[in-house]
Amino acid sequence: MSTLIVFLPPRDPAVPSQEWLLPDMPFLLLDKSGRKERAGRAGLAFLPRAATTVLIVAARDVLMLSASLPPLKGQRLKQALPNVVEDQMIQDPQTCHIALDPQPLDDGSRVLAVIDRGWFRFLVEAFAAAGHRNLRAVPVTRCLPAAQSAPGGLAESAAIGGNDEPPVAAALAGGEAGAAAASQPESPLLAPASLVVAVLGTVRETAQAILADAAAGAASVVPEAPSPSSAPLASADPRVEVAIARGSLGEGLAVPASALEATLSALAGDTPLDVFELTDVPGAEPALAPHAALPMFGKASSDARIVLPPGAKPLPFEALARAAIASRLDLCQFEFESRPWRLDRATVRRLRVPIGLGVAALLVAVIGANVQWIVMARERDALNAQMTELLLNAFPKTTVVLDAPAQMKSQLDRLRLASGQLSPDDFLSLAARLARSLGPLPVNGIAALDYHDRRLDLTFKPQVSADPDFTKRLAQSGLAGELDSGTGKWAIKNRSAAQ
Image 1 (cartoon, rainbow, N blue to C red):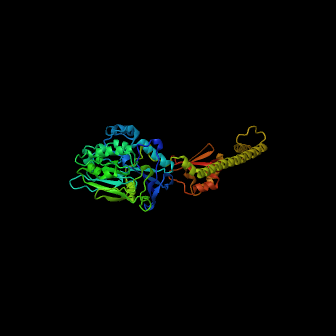
Image 2 (image 1 turned 30 degrees about the horizontal axis):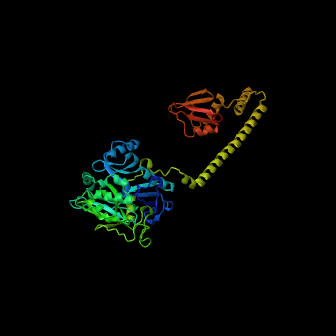
Image 3 (image 1 turned 120 degrees about the vertical axis):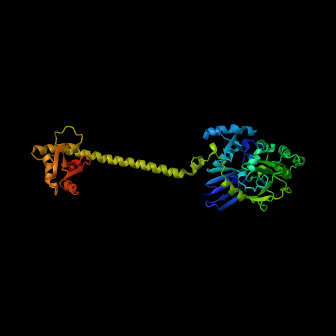
């Protein structure tokens, strides 16, 4: 089945929820065999449709934490999760959606992905309304190549995106990074509060002040590092999205381009750092738009340049998108779990012709069945009327007609007896036809012959057994015979009475 991967912009906390809008977003469309079919940038209404849609959520919107969980499942676990993470968050955890990594860590704890519930609900409902029913959401920190652990040290990685490419920065730590990072004190910059107050790309005085405070907090982690807050923030200084990942955990922030190197140096300290730069983003090619900027991210000056740390590695957008498909962590859990079978108005509009045809076929079938029943009921009534008339004509003294065929048979049997003729169900009639049907069986081989209820119960002697053609000879004489395997007796009846 086809897959659409869409890279989402980060949420701007300065914009109220009633003004949330999604700009043109980079996307990659893969066919059912995994080959690249289309790539580009489009608004939500113009994104191509696919069987599965994977959303790459900005690192600044998702906080990755590790915690030990109580042995609960389903709705009870969902209700307990805010209490598990409340000590590690500044934002009210009741306003957050918390998803679980299905794979536990080595120490038995679980990785929790925390995102603002209002923002995530807006994303899910917007894509569902646009016709993308089967949704998955993956944090961008889970979409990067694993960094190689440095000998004797802790490996981290980060990817950087500027204002003229979709903002992203991601880090994925190698082998022992998760456990080592968990034992270190957390920086104030990595606290959940940075997810709430950071502003991306919009060049305002308030945004500059927030980012300057964040950069100053990052520099305070390593006192000897130069503080980015000492550098002047020009109004045209582009903002850069940075996501940090340590093992299975991760977080994100936005910093001015001029303070990028100093901020990364302050965050890394003595830890080796692998840096990735997002490249080949659809719709951001210099030939098409040399200084393009996403509308909601603000706009950088034409001469602004982002100076990356030495050794930064390119990370193609297609590699990021394919890694999102392989990620086991899906934010669409609990009430946001994807249910493609649910019908909405858009689906009903698309299915109204097949639904109409199905309803019409059902109506035709119901009407046809009722018409056929009416016709057959009239034929039954006509046959019953003919049989009743025949009975009354033959036996006019009949006062009540309940079952015309049975009453006719009974009256004929009475006439036959009155005229001295044997009835087919009489003992003599049954015995005479049975004698003709014995064939090679000896007459003295019969041990007992009883007559009751208009049938003969025939018992052969132990040394005599009926041959396979015995039932055929009975049928030729107008009799029907059944062997009771329990008693070894044959029940002989008149064939018309047996039917």
